[in-house]
Length: 459
Ligand code: B12
Ligand code: SF4
Image (tube, rainbow, N blue to C red; front, side, top):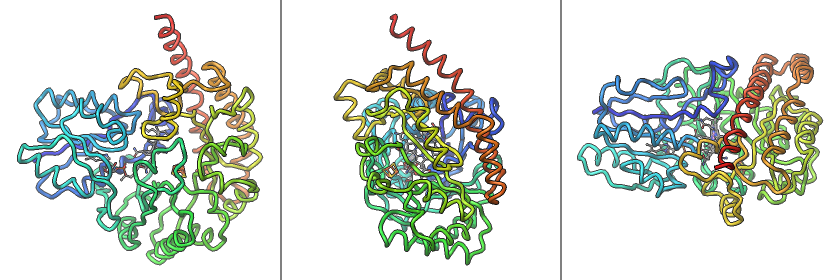
């Protein structure tokens, strides 16, 4: 039995365009969901993972599979449906899973034969059995999996063309920020995989550098932090010799022992969501506000950096308090905080979030010809109506922000600082140049987008 597991690409995601910017070679990440599914698949299935981010194959030239599984974030949904249409046209059944199919079940059911909502661990083998017996159900619900049944991902199935391996050690997030789908999808209960499983899986990863995809590697409560320390100690004992980056909340900076252990275990950088530079901006977003209020952000960032780790800050533009000037304000604050890189996204109502419900009810979802418009839900296009900023204004703010933060002189200053502080200057250089190049690609992408929006207005 032949199984294709497909990760559809979206050409509007600038970080996968490695032909337009060679720095993006370091940013094409592995589709871990499909590697985990492969790990759950019994040996009688011959599995091929197709990652369109490495280039879409000539599907008609590939051998005919018996079953196709397709994953999709919202921004990939439209392409997922195109791939599905191709295989369904050949009479091959298509199963779709992942965050978009879960949040937009009815839509997905129109385009595929079967939808798996939630996490797949509890239902995937049943789906395969049903597919073999040609009695696939329209819907399976995996809910939230026990972390002890999360299979080791099949790290061997993809070509060695990726700069980074990928692994997940926890699921779920208690913070439930209004714009984020994680709590809606993975639940508020913070679930941690057994440490032995994680260490063994780490050992099976070929790449020296790894992305730990957890939404929050360390968690928020004392027992979460204790588990994170236990994990780091086990990684040190296992002499993994990996360098890794992860996502965390700013409370990472508050525990000296945690920082020491993380650095010893190979942590070289953390992505931290700061979201807004003002308390008013943060207040509307959810419980993350409690972690950031009254904090000396610069001191927290420095504490992390002193242990040789880089800090990548993530911000949102287009909050209801954001007015003209917000772009320069974010860039200036991030420089003042001493961040190594920043990633600024437009406030985007992703389906299944509280923000979606709110913006929908206020008729502020501007791009809503679905499924086609999902392609713009990459956080790099302004898809909503913003309170104080028109479409052209918010794009100008985004350009002003990146122009300022990623100016050549500032990039060089940051890379030199990393050099003197012995904090991976090469990683800093690659990260900064990749963002800088992508921001330049965004200028063209925004111009195309504005033209398209003008055509729509005239129709
Ligand atoms: C790592 C990551 C990335 C990486 C790598 C992505 C990749 N190719 O793997 C990078 C940095 C590139 C990335 C980029 C983006 N990301 Co991202 N990312 C994540 C993150 C943190 C982890 C994903 C992961 O590997 N999870 C581990 C696997 C095992 O879990 P899983 O994917 O959920 O898969 C399970 C189930 O969903 C299910 N399943 C999944 N697929 C399938 C398929 C079938 C057939 C079946 C049966 C089951 C099934 O089974 C799996 C096992 O249980 C998630 C948050 C999260 N917790 O998932 C956000 C997340 C997926 N990203 C998000 C977003 C918005 C983006 C971006 C659009 C914007 C951005 N700037 O980040 C881009 C767009 C990328 C694109 N190509 O379109 C949102 C998506 C929301 C949505 N509705 O689309 C999430 C949920 C975060 C959030 N804050 O809301 N991302
Ligand atoms: S802390 Fe991060 S993962 Fe958790 S809900 Fe907020 S944005 Fe999502």
